[in-house]
Length: 493
Image 1 (spheres, helix red, strand yellow):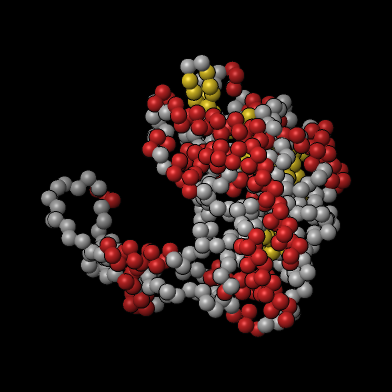
Image 2: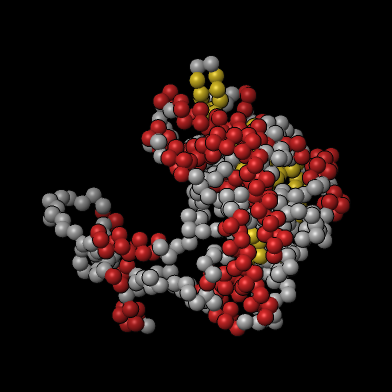
């Protein structure tokens, strides 16, 4: 099972796997778009096709196979109950242009989920339509820009971003037209509050801060930072990708946050990875609520309605626009609300407590094996951070990660955050048992000890995976992304 041929190598492009009746001659309406050459796809029978893709799927690593230790990703187990609810015909089969009266149940799901998100965050309102975390970031920054322009302060063009923030934060600010300035971290891995406050001024639109941050630490000065930013005329955006560590324990609204996106596909257990699907609703403070995007669901005496451009009226005239064509990710909404209702308020609090407990268990179990740069900065939150300092000369994080593959585990997040040399970021999540964590700890400790001892076999790991170690520089600079017939390729050369 270590090798699987390409589908082009299994099938023949000159044959087909099925018999088709000769079509009745008809006048083509394709014009210049009509195909003039063979399609070039291999002809496979149904069994050949099913077996090929099933064999490929068995080479994938997924949360259903084992522990997924990626940091800042919250790859928790997705309860099958959520999937069952999302597949109900009344939710899965509706059309975004269906008459409002025919989708009252779906609108109520959106409104109920919105209520939970506002309650859990202590904020004033929520925009449900953003479809991912970075999309939500853009939504929040655009609302900040609209608010500043509304009060005649569109000249504020600087966004401050701490070193410990997610990499999407500065990218989002730049995309929205702002200049980004970094704020350094202190020795304990948190934002340097004094330097941030010292940089505030009439040109600063606001700050984008990740809390808990990418070092796995809670920003304890968040309220001080928010108050200072507000006093200087700016606004505060919080990256809520790590909300799983504090849900039910901390309300960002109490910390002076003006806007924060919530990754439903992380905190509330909807599937993600490989490019989607995701959902990134954004909660807003009272100061930013008037500028939140359309559409949103509103409940009246005669049912649920969508407030859009035609019906916004004076009560939402300041909306900066809309983020998507329709209303957001219905399947994600259904899954997230199912997760919330099945846990309840006390269960959601236990989720964050267990996530933090698991992360600290890993941190303390390995801090004598691997260097934990901020191990003395107090308990970590949802993720444990290690560095490659202390490994033998010539060995680094990549060798530890490749060695873990041979142990049957997906590697942790590598080389992020950038403030730590050779970073190894591990997020166990609350859905992992102590037994599963113990297995991972033993495996990582074993690989790390080999790297510290200079075990040369690690330099060529993995040895038992479908693919051996690639030349990553060559793969990045000269990737082969398209299959070519070997005979034709050789003739062309």
